[in-house]
Image (cartoon, one colour):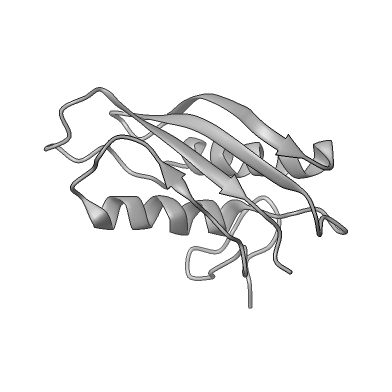
Length: 120
């Protein structure tokens, strides 16, 4: 059964059909980036009727795995969709779902941009 609501089930995929694009610094730990995508998908719940909405959300993952400076950098459609995208990132960070930045990453934080589009 898919994860639903504010408390996603760790074993459920959630966010089925979500199209995600990441941008940021070159990053050598592919598994870490895949986990970011997996966790955002688990937490994202698009509002009903958001068939044409889009949002680009930028945020920073801190060394300890928390998130900061979450903002919508582009979007169209409903405020509810943009809010749901930002909330997915905020909840994942608050719950420690991304994990600490890998020891080999030289910076104190990693910039990420996700493009959210609803499933068709």
